[in-house]
Amino acid sequence: MHAVFVMIKCELGKAYEVANHIVENIDQTSEIYSVSGQYDLLAKFYVEDADDIGHFICGQLHKTPHLKDTFTIDTFNAFTS
Image (cartoon, rainbow, N blue to C red; front, side):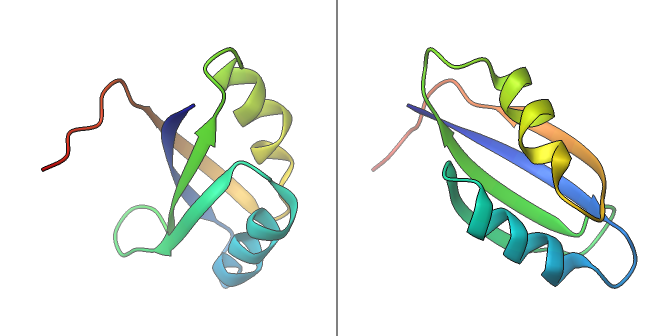
């Protein structure tokens, strides 16, 4: 499994609704943070190595009500101390 981070832009006033929907309905969800700036949420997902990230994003995440836009960051290595 590897981590995928997704910046999420929501319809105005719907960030908490979007975050709750993702946590309750997408099993791959690890964490979601509210953030300031261009996007409203930062979500961390763990996706199986064999799974297609595009299918995960388009087939599951993009079906979330009140979600307007996403920016996906795929990961390669995790560095720890």
